Amino acid sequence: MHPDFPYQLYLVISEESSVHHSLLKVAEMAIEGGVDIIQLREKNLNTSDFIKKAEKLKKLTDRYNIPLIINDNLEVANAVDAFGIHVGNSDTPPSEIQQIWNHNKAIGYSIEYLEQLETEQTKIANHLGISPVYSTSTKTNTVTEWGIEGIKKIRNLTKKPLVAIGRMNASNAAEVIKAGADCIAVVSAICAANDPKEAAKEIKNQIQNHQNEN
Ligand code: TZP
Ligand code: MG
Image 1 (spheres, rainbow, N blue to C red):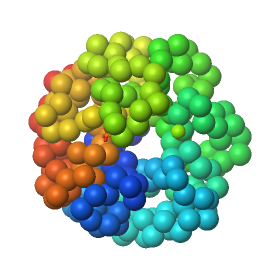
Image 2: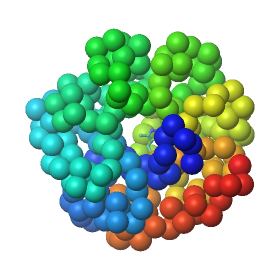
Image 3: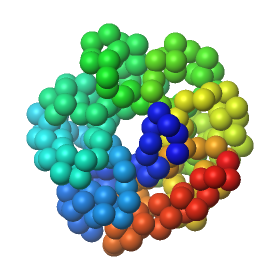
């Protein structure tokens, strides 16, 4: 676990990805299974509907004392007083967010190619996404499939908290943690599971059993 980002299992959720239960039910079951941070990532909602959804989720995450991150929409993040925001390389850059948002807020930034690590944006970000570790049908407009070697490369170049995302599940969580990731972010393996609680528990166990092997 990274001291600056004390979370191991990160759920990235949307209405669309919540297959067998409502978004709120998936989130609650996942928290009960061990998810310790949640991102709301809604790509097809207008800001007003995004805020309404975020408000409902924030009530739940507050009840469990779980930080809520909003994907790429500062207005929504502000409206619900989110813990942080997550942006990719083609979104509002961290430098811009930092100028207009409370400095105590977390800024997550996706690393899509190696050269980004030398940029001001990466310096400003609090934690970095390794995006994607493995290509995934959940997000198809990606640049680099990092794989295990990519995680090791990034780990050697930065001390920032690293969040691995992209086809993460209970079968590959251990190798990703051993390669140097601090946290694992998951969409489908939890949101599309019949039992999101059990799914989260299995991944969390893998992380905890291997976190000292990196
Ligand atoms: N960013 C990089 S991969 C990804 C995001 C949001 C989607 C990961 O989804 P899944 O279903 O866990 O592979
Ligand atoms: Mg984005």
